[in-house]
Each structure stands twice: as C-alpha cells, then as structure tokens.
Image (cartoon, rainbow, N blue to C red):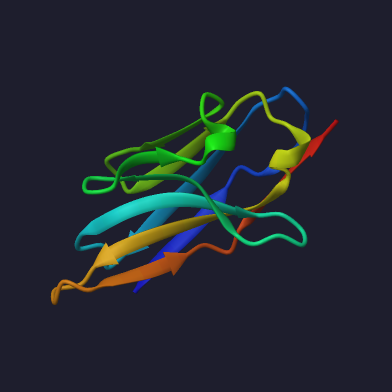
Length: 119
C-alpha cells in the first residue's frame, strides 16, 4: 500500500504564492509519475502539473510560467504556485502512479488540500 499526504493549502490574495507538498510513503518500489490535479466547484478534475522519468514534466497551459513542480529524493513532490489568480481556487490533489512487478500501474490519490485565492 501507498500513503499520500498533501499539505500547504490555504487562503491567499491574488498575486500571492503558496507551496504545496505531497509526501508518498509505503510500498514505493518504482514510481512512474507524481502529479498535481485540481477540481474547482462544478468543474471536472484537471491536470495541473506532472513529473516522471518517462512522462517528463508537463503543465496545463493556464499555469505555465507561474507554477513549478519539483520532486526530491525522498518521494516528496512540490508545487510552487506564484502569481495566483482567483481562477486557481480549487481543491488540489496529489496523484502518485506506481509500477507493479507485472508492469501494470496503480494510481494513489491524496485527500486533497484547499487553495483559495481572493481577488
């Protein structure tokens, strides 16, 4: 089993910054990718940023140049969010994709952290 724990959400004024953290622990034999998704009220969950050896680093267009995803050697992934806008308000979720010994993958999601940007 893999445990995923997010932290770092909160309330910030437009133009401000926040840093989200996501720590993965447990049976982490091989991680395929680590990423951040968000879901605003009444909208579908969307990919924000993703990083992995085979996937590379990808961002959704609306956050390019403002958000940066990074990962350390201890299986923690970060999302540095600068120049925040009201439209960035959402619950942010961390997703860890892990390889199984058979070559399949399993997705593990965190419980989400609220990011609210006031205009």
